[in-house]
Image (cartoon, rainbow, N blue to C red; front, side, top):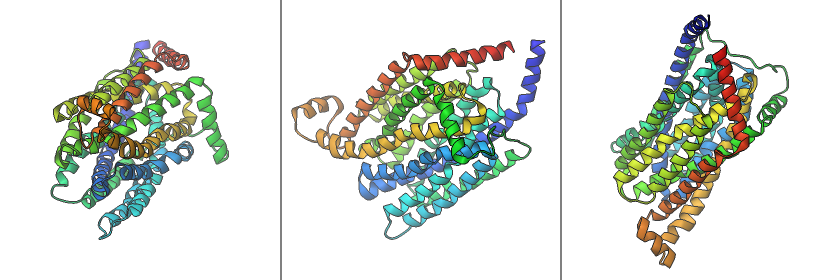
Length: 446
């Protein structure tokens, strides 16, 4: 009897999984386009200003609006058709890139205009992510959450896996404006894909429709705070995103100090292949023995290899260490997300993930703002000085331009590895793990 139920459930969920995979394909295409713009603008700003801090400001403008508006996007995802929210978010984000395009083709490019363009695009992208995450729960049973998380991670890795080498090659024959145009095309392509999946697909509705907007946001806060482990998990992930933000900001100037744009693109793609390998590996695991162990190992491994990147100026070693760092990255996101997802009711997941996104992604913003001060103002001048300490460190990691960034990478990686060791011992997070395991056993017995 139990076997017959399992067969029926598998048959019923096949169409849902196909629809989900189509959505992931759309996310994959959109991710490639976003990666082209991210890579192109980073190189463009570094060349224009020569400052890591200026690049951090642009990155903050691209992230901050989406982060601040994530809770509101979560409420909308619980109130309205989640696919419709995704369509609007993709479409309007693509149109906003016209502002960035106008800025870079101008004879006198303005950083302020670029900030406005990426900021407006980010505002509308706040509609997309909470709706997409909540759609996983709409479409799939709990036993497919880890597999789905791996697919989503794989789609997101396209901006790191495919975009850098493609952008690096394109920049040899064209300009950043072409990359932005291609990004806009991918936005509109993704809209068509989402519209196709939306036909015949009904979203689960919030149990509190009809209540006020702010009361619904409050419901998301209450849902998150109901378990202490959720709050602890949010703090841990915020620390992790702070550390990982340094990867995004410091890797490009570190490599450009010893190589060119084409080499940077190829190296970035090789390193990002680690994320693809890690995502595929996790996608093949249907029910891990411990999500907490997955999270802890992910943080520790990622931190260790991140620190090793800063030790050498050899491109082959940097590629190898970077590859291994990215192998561990999916374990962090998926382990944390499943632990939280299994401890939240589906009716408030849009709001809850919006709130969680607001808090945890602030780690990136803080790192983007801090990296300019630390890299340009402290570590680079320190490593180019003649102090006894700088000379001693330089004998290990090398001297010259970019080695201050390398030292900052080493320190940040060590901090991330320590976080991995600490998280495995936190009692409140162990409670979340117990709930997740209990849910799995209940599904198996059913």
